[in-house]
Image (cartoon, rainbow over all chains, first blue to last red; front, side, top):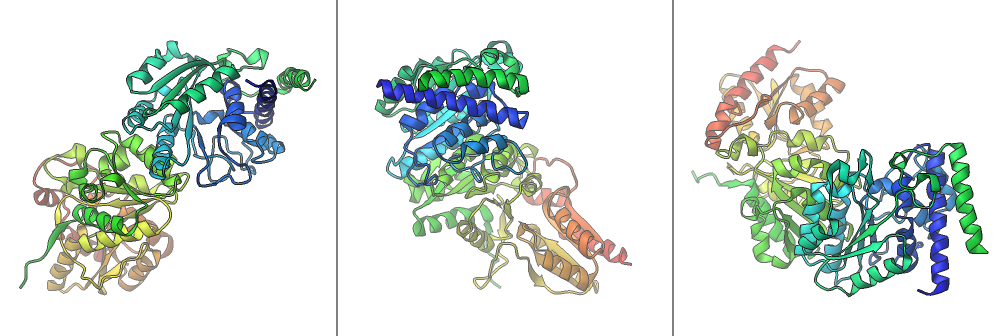
Length: 280
Length: 315
């Protein structure tokens, strides 16, 4: 990977993480843990992978991204703001009654949001429908869905997995954020979805296991997904919940709670340090 | 006298889809392994490339339909009412209704008249479920003519539509001059003593009831209310003012259906007695459709009895 691109991605990721903290702190609620775990893949998607244009968010043949794990909306909004879809300043209005930034993604009000999500298991079906629509339009665009590892306990995910493989939607990539934690504990303790990769493979998918915080591995996985014909691709990303904020890492308690003022200050100081180092 | 033409509204649905498919290549039809029964098989035969069988996975089908709609297609998603509105309720609510996507749900085998398959398949809750979704349009046609026009109108409008079709062949009520408009009820008969507001296959029975009542000297008006949401308030208020008593008739639970929609309008605008004919908050059972309609009181006799009671309740 080109060093300049990598530096830019690292910067994007830290800005997305700051946006997540900014949003959830101001909202006094929201889901920072599972937002921070997907900051890196979102940085790559919006800088390197998605054919999207912030000035034309509804362009017919744009690539689509569906955040099936809709509770990670703070990460999606931060990524969209960082990519120019709306002002970064607006992230502070997350979840406020006068704001367009709904607690979960809303495609009606928010530029760049391709599907309203939040009820787990449903986004992947809608994304499969978009991929099918693309096929009907001459393979006009690619579709990406981000799912949680807890989310895949929903049966609908496997209905969609069966469908996408049966219809040979090779323009479709499902990214599983395997941070191993859900509200009630580890995914194993609650209701183990493992082995995730073998399940998708058994459903007829091309499966790639990666470290979800390695831009090189993310880049290679998306390239391999594009090269794979006749099958959808599942990228199973090993991630750390709360990644990038020391006291939130691997702590299930940060699934759905916001930082207070002191915690906000510590988190932002950590992220500011990373940003300052990158900007040298 | 020529025999009355009898057609199931699901047949009209299948034919209308073919007609639409010929006119509009953006029309895509989804089914969940019931193409032969929902009659989307007619479309499949004509346009195999624009027919997608999702298999027995209605929740996924609704989501896929929503995604396809965002790509600029007019999508019809079909299954039995029980599974389209029941099993996939939350998918319809969150992935179609909330973003107000252009998905048309063709739900067949609604109500008790499913017949022998019994209660597990006799959906009398679908109107109630769909009515609570903001922005959802609900159409329950009375015959094949109206069913065809409803499909055409649904395709023309932007946004989600729930269309309710039956398995049972029902007599044709409307002729080729019939004008259908979403959101408009239609007087089939004027009257001054009581108004029967009916939907779906109960419209035929309402007309029969009006004849029986006439023989007893009661002048009943009959309104066909195909669109249950948005409900035609004007015609309900008109009926309440003109006749001072209303009976509703639907092949659906009396809870949450046409009757409650009408009663709400009447109570809030023009209070007069409203009595409801419908399935009395009970599950169905197996048997021949026509026999079941009698057993569950979905007949002219029951409408007549309620009409007399409503008249007696007038101030």
